[in-house]
Image (spheres, rainbow, N blue to C red):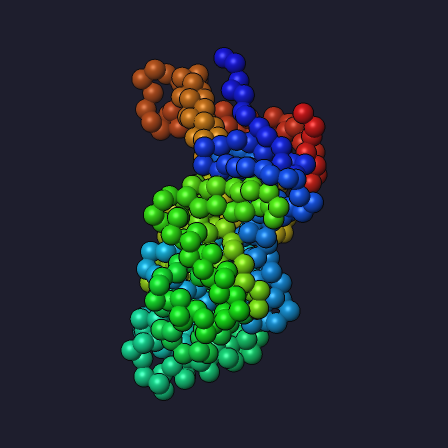
Length: 411
């Protein structure tokens, strides 16, 4: 079957793939000498354009850099219910640990916020933390002044108490729903804008209100028309049109005193999601973890944990610590897959499903070839399989060299 040819185009000396959800539209008049910088985003295996200034990863890198320099970084998300505050929060958390930064993530809401002193005492001293207060405004609106002051004091001194870096994220649905202390943070994100909020935003941004109004128009298009546009040329009528949620939404971010547009997509993993309230019951020491998983897998106290657990643990330790916990063959596979990802491959679930089905088929064929009687019992069959596995282990293994994870072989 002939391979499908993707339609491509070139803009600002870079190649992009034409898609149905991200389109570069140009009604060019006289060519101008200035164009906004454009970066590339990989979306479903295709390269699509993103204004460099709108790229979410650049903002998140600056959040991490600020936290390293200042030890405490405050983030406030302002937006109506359902406008994307939690989605953007999870995107930020996910991207932070994708950058190789290891933070313990804590989600709080409701009455938990008002018992912050107790929560801080239970935190791991000397380890960076991300603290997320979801729907904080509902709690703070009804809280007593003494409780709010206690919370403010706990957040002010937390980096000294934990003796490590802290990123605090507070999600509120209304810009004046809480005290100025909680609104006055290093990074402010707006995920929506309404007529009523326009007046409130004037107090926050004043000379930047033209940016707020432009965002209001983009938000209106995004939610009511299903698309929004990013202008990429100051002298040509050139814009990038994005379909809502394919993959982006648009937000505003104020970095200290700099207010600008930002795109964000849905990106999360199990590490980004809040725990289900059973946090205190989870093991915290090596012996407790072994006992926890041992109770799930072992039938008797003398049995070892299964090989599947050991392999899964090696890979998790690699991701969590960045240290080399894999065998030489596993490192080769890891680095090879990393290079494939850098080269644009994205269908990892499809690959996993395919390999899994191939292994199941191979296992079935192998069972048919086991040297056992046709009417063998389960125990006899198990012994025959074990004997073959022992013979396989005696076979010399291929010496697979490690790949340079920064090298991508040319086509």
